[in-house]
Length: 173
Image 1 (cartoon, rainbow, N blue to C red):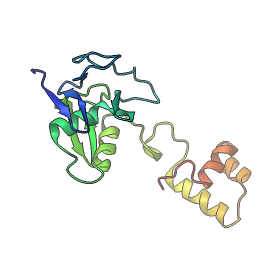
Image 2: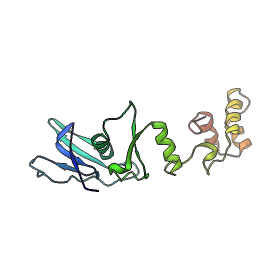
Image 3: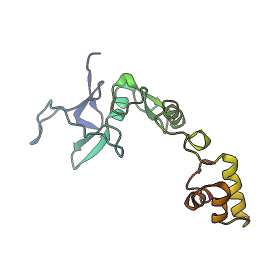
Image 4: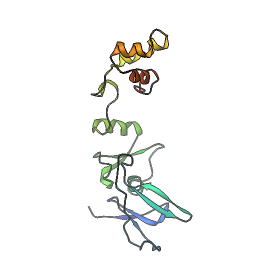
C-alpha cells in the first residue's frame, strides 16, 4: 500500500501516515522539516506506540493508533468509541489494521484473540467456581464464617479468601 500523509488536525506542524508514522512538517531547532519522529519502545506498562507532539506552549504524548484512526477513518463515530487493532498487535498502527468499535466489542475481541486472560471459571488458573465465590461472600456477610474458616473450607490461602470477600478478586460477579 502506498504511504499517504495527512496533516494532524490538532497539531498542524505534524503529519500522520496510513502506515502509522509521524513526521514534522516545519523546522525547529532540534528537528528538520520532513523528519520522521521516533516512537519509544513498547513495554508492558506502555503497550501502544506513542509520540510526543509540540504545540505553542507545551507538548503532549499522543497514541499513534488514535492519530491514524482519526486522520484516516474519521472522528470517533460515537461517544466512547475505541480503536481496535484487528490483528491484536498493539504495535501495528497501519490504517488497514484499525477500526472504531465499542468498548464492549473491544474487550470481547481481546478475549477471543487471547490478548486478555479470561475472568472467573474461564480462566485456566481459577481455584474457585462462581458458586463457591458467592457462597463465600454470603457466609462471611452473615457472620457464619471467618476468613480463616473460608480459606480452609474452600482450599485457598487466607489472602485469597479475603480478596474474594472484599471483591478485589472475582469482582466481575
